[in-house]
Image 1 (cartoon, rainbow, N blue to C red):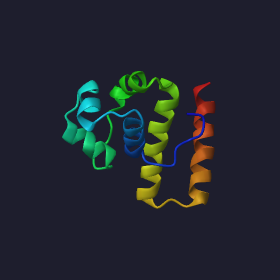
Image 2: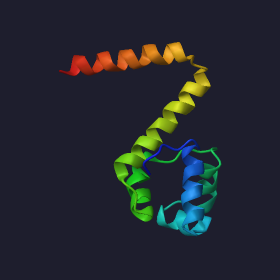
Image 3: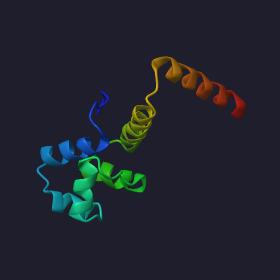
Length: 105
């Protein structure tokens, strides 16, 4: 998973599931979810539980850190979309994030 996905995290899970020939029910059982909830996650109607990322990574033999990056970047993208942020506003936010890193030192 070297290139970053463009699809939502739910769509990404669906891609992984179909590529690996899992049914909704099979994957849901491995994630300890019911298939209705997994369907809602895949369709963007419900958020994926971050605590289940390592389990998802293990099922599909993915790097947990990379998967977490995709998960968090999707959450951020959703927030940016909902707030209708401009590119300029995002640059300012990035600068503030960098500044916060200096405060920790």
